[in-house]
Image 1 (spheres, one colour):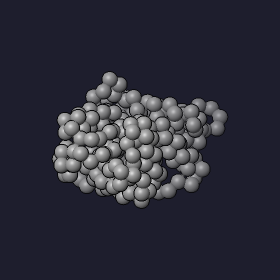
Image 2 (cartoon, rainbow, N blue to C red):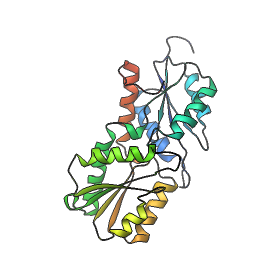
Image 3 (tube, helix red, strand yellow):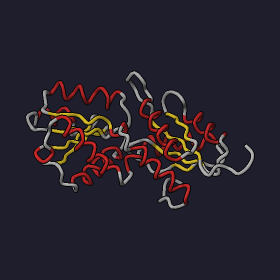
Image 4 (cartoon, rainbow, N blue to C red):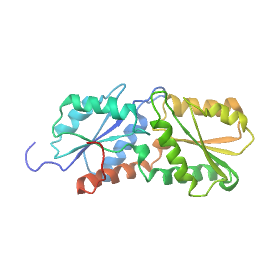
Length: 251
C-alpha cells in the first residue's frame, strides 16, 4: 500500500456459531454496520469454522493500517479470549501487533442495551415490565467462573434501572440452570434476555426449546448480540482506539 497508512483496521472475533441456517449471520451483520459507522476496514474471524482468526488478521494487515484492533464478540473475558484467541493472535506474528480489546460482555454500556431490548420486546408481546421478572440467561462454563461472573455483573447493573419487578439470572451449563428456574416459577411473567452473541445452538435453539418445554409464562428477547444497538457500541470502542482515548484492553 502506498501513501499514508490507515489509522486502524479492525477484526471482529467470535467463537463461531453452532447451528442455525447462517452460522455467522450476527457477526457478518455487525461487521457491515461497523464499517458503515466508522469507515474503517473491518474483517471477521472465528475460532471454529471459517473465516478463521488467522485469515481475518491477514486481511486486516493487508489494508496497511497503523494499528490493528481485535474486538472479541464474547460475553466474558474467560478461557476462549484469554487463552485461545490470544494465543492464536500471537502465533500469527502479525504486524503491526494486534491489540486485543475488552470483550463485548464487559462493555459498561451493554446493560443499558439489555434493558432497552427487554422493554421493546415486552411492549411488543404485551408483557408489563413493572410486573414481570427479567431473567438474564448466560452460557455458564465448567472451564472457569468468567462467564457466570460477567452475567451476574450485567444483571446487577440492569437491576439498578428498576424497570422490572425483579432481575435474576440462570445458565445453560451451570447452576442455577435455566430449565430448573423456569419449571420452579412457571407461572411468573418472565422476560428472558439472552446474554449471548449470535443465534447459535444455545441462543437460537436451546433457550426457546427450554421455554417451550417448561410451559413457562415467558417471552424471549433473543441474543443481545443480534441487536442493531451493538454496532454503535463496537464503533465507539474502535473510535476510542483511533483517538487514543481507549481504556486499558489486553496488552
